[in-house]
Length: 146
Image (cartoon, rainbow, N blue to C red; front, side, top):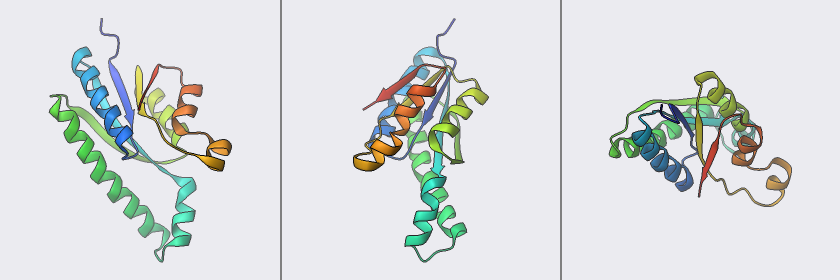
């Protein structure tokens, strides 16, 4: 029996996320696992982005989705280099750690592979990082890539 049948990889487009995709791809190949690459548009940032841009909320949301689709496609290509098929790439909106944990439970993930996020200063003190929240609240193993 394979240890990990379903591996969820939440990504934010950073190099840490790319490292997580590369490792998850190798694990997926080794275990014969399904791989799901996943991005959450942080709803808490949407209002701030709208305030600082001259675009409508819908236009800002669409820009974020287009950007996410582009880096998700790049990360899917990276997974394919390991001869692994990322079964799906998904974009959701909400509070990232909550949506990641909901997706892991809904999909039945056996492992979450996530890149570390480098939040610093006051926002780190008040909010913590997404990876820290996922580790703290997950019911499945979480592997954090630097």
